[in-house]
Length: 460
Ligand code: TYD
Ligand code: MG
Image (tube, rainbow, N blue to C red):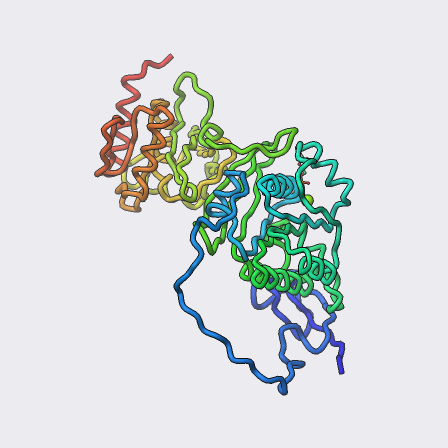
């Protein structure tokens, strides 16, 4: 007979604890343990598993006969397709996370409308908005005539039984936190519910061949709310991000079983919905004009795509005992390391200066290849020597002060050529017939190059 018992579940990692504690021992998070009523022993336990049922032999198959890329379903939205690794793969489950109001529902409505326009059968199930509200949004986006099957539902059982008869190719669930399964006593949005509902929907995707797109809310520290196991269950996890006060949005793949992770799609939120930004470099480069000191254009790679981003630095004399260091869009520890290397290897005195570093356009850079560009911006500001605006910079800096080569050099240089740049400051061993090159094998070379620019640029 079913027995009801209580378990304390970590809302962050899903670990089960026998009693309440302030801190989860398994993931180290504070205040994440909550009481959840479960039937038949703690979730995940085999307490109720019948030992009498007979095992059915599994059937093995071969690696051959895999699906090729032509079977990927293109959504007609190039940036969305790119972030997914080139389109949606049948039988797969996707999780899209993002802050409230970032535009997840808008994006998915546009994507489903695009799919429907190409003749795919799509269903959009919302647990948050009424059909009338979604229709209103569709009107604003100009997609009200698309053949999208719209429903407002939250019961997992109702949804699954409907999907099994309707069998759409693509199903959007907005959002996974609003679903609830009547087989569980826990409240909607709780770890148990989110995990169980996600599991059922992923199973449905695998067995029916449908593509299931789940929308997930994020917690205040930016993780998708609910147990981490949901991220492991699905085939791809994408985060929809925005920078405070900016209209552009980045759809970033953090996990993808069928494509490259770290791939990004860039959008601009306008009055008529999300517009694809095909050439994001334009977004992250500041407007032209006179060269100013303290700026360098970094030729970066986001996923498989080259993106040019301006890095800005301001170095000013400090009166503080511990000068200020502030970074936006880059790693603070990386800046400290770079300043220490410039200090130790090139004798530059940043110790008595405040240092501010900013990546233009609200972009976030995590590539080590940005080291040289950051160093170039820092030196340019320190010497008040403007770097030429039509040069790009890339290279990784080692603690010895050596500039190390980076991957995808050709793609970086090609993007620079395409956008009309004239030169590149690179690690040693780079060749390019169309660009003027300066190879810096150590940071000392960079410092010399920057100093030389000071003497050739007349000060106003
Ligand atoms: P929404 O898709 O509802 O966000 P989410 O589902 O991630 O919570 O987007 C809501 C925001 O987007 C809202 O602040 C208004 C803005 N928006 C526009 O600027 N233009 C538009 O055409 C639409 C539909 C929304
Ligand atoms: Mg929404």
